[in-house]
Amino acid sequence: MPDPDKPLLIKRYASRRLYNTETSDYVTLEDIAVFIRQGRDVQIVDLKSGDDLTRQYLLQIIAEHESRGENVLPTDVLTSLVRSYTTQAATVVPQFLAASFEMLREGQSKMMEQMTKTNPMAKLPGFEAMRAQQEAFFKAMTSGLMPGSSGPAKDEDEAKKP
Image 1: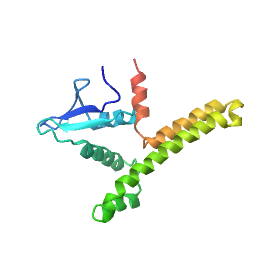
Image 2: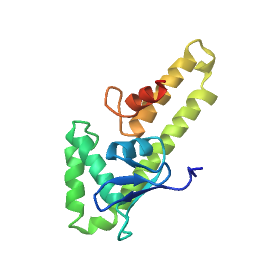
Image 3: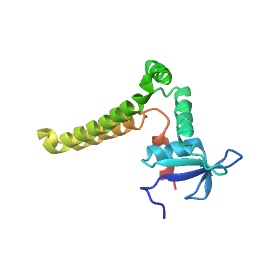
Image 4: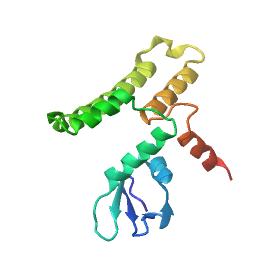
């Protein structure tokens, strides 16, 4: 039985095919992106050398989404990232980005909590539907997907088919 607390181990074979060790089948980059959107951590390792290739593949997933017009990272942010590799900021940037995303997640959680617990409008008709819509919006925003883009919504619809 898969342990959702442990990263999903994906092995890359010499043929560059990616193998899901939990389900014993081959997966694509898009499959890996879906696992991540569903909240699962992944670890991708080279079968022969044992090298951790996770960062390389995560960057490839991001590059593919950006090239399809699913622009999440503004050009000035990408430019700053490139510059940070050749400056003293290279040691600060990863910590800054991690802290920024953590603040975004915490802000989302607090906002959703405020909408349900302390909001006097919670007793009004239709409030629950509005809250659910806001929650879906924030989930899409933090997973890097906005309504109308390709991603989990399409995969979830396909999963519901018999």
